[in-house]
Length: 215
Ligand SMILES: Nc1ncnc2c1ncn2[C@@H]1O[C@H](COP(=O)(O)OP(=O)(O)OP(=O)(O)O)[C@@H](O)[C@H]1O
Image (cartoon, rainbow, N blue to C red; front, side, top):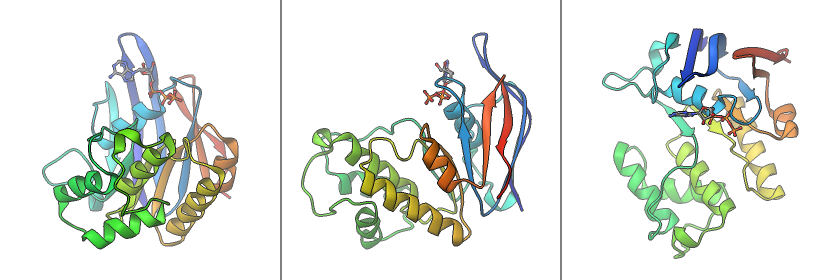
């Protein structure tokens, strides 16, 4: 099933052309990588898919099952794009509770079990302003997955994680794929890409090239 189809997509910022007539298809149930040098437009591509920014030309088709009725943001998508803003004076769990209040889909126990899953202590009283980078990254991961979202767009999900955490998050993502979820991720670490991705799109010359055949 075609989940996302990118057709002749172009996007530039003040003459800085990032995508020019780019095309790509993302099928349900696979893990995709998006690679490219710093500043090549990976995060911008994710923002375009989520409807946060508009293309200059071209279309992004989202499968009707995942279109929101009253918003551009697709439904059932969990995302990490750039570093999310947090309430620095509050704990990790309080930040996640605030985000969970938007949809009211999950219980407090769901939040706690997700925190444990990514290696955070739900009972910790530490405020987020004193969290390490890796701890903040785990909160970002937790918010992306806590509502059991079916599609995950993860921009650098392994950033700042220690090697045990990288291993456990990789295993989690592979388990999610087995369960039918679709994941699109970026990483500057080739090992993440090689171990996880069924197909890789490389942003090069303002196009999306298939860098690896489907295994
Ligand atoms: N809202 C915006 N206005 C102007 N320029 C922008 C905007 N958003 C992104 N850009 C520019 O677009 C380019 C691509 O940015 P993007 O964050 O997508 O890169 P990236 O491939 O994710 O890079 P990295 O590997 O460093 O994370 C950068 O030059 C950035 O400055």
